[in-house]
Image (tube, rainbow, N blue to C red; front, side, top):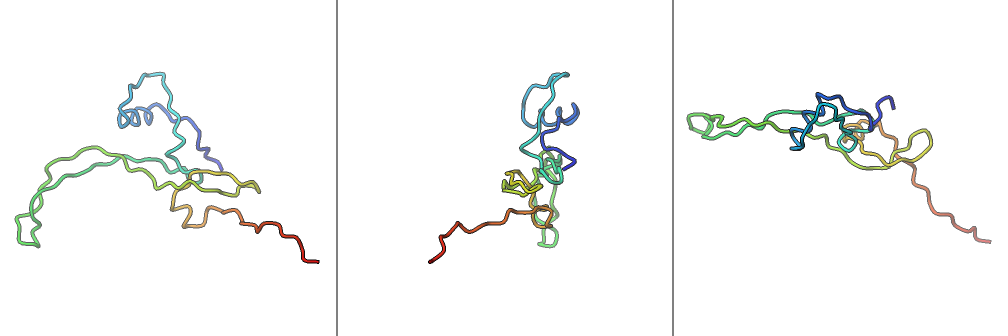
Length: 119
């Protein structure tokens, strides 16, 4: 657990996040990013483009697809909120699906309820 989910983000990343969240950004303001970050690997939202196209593809008999617009967008990680066993204690945290599928997350063992022995 070198990367804590509640660490502060530097001003450059905070400015990018404020742009996509449509919030005002001041030079001294710091932003906490906890909910959109994986608790195991630290995966965060990344920036990219959304490309709008029109036209018919060449292999379908058209003249080709044309790009009509490019806008900025955010790719958010696929986070699931689940219980994780860390150092013998059970904690609830947000973990990305890649960590769950690769086995980096240890799930707590489900115990049966206590039953009285039959005498």
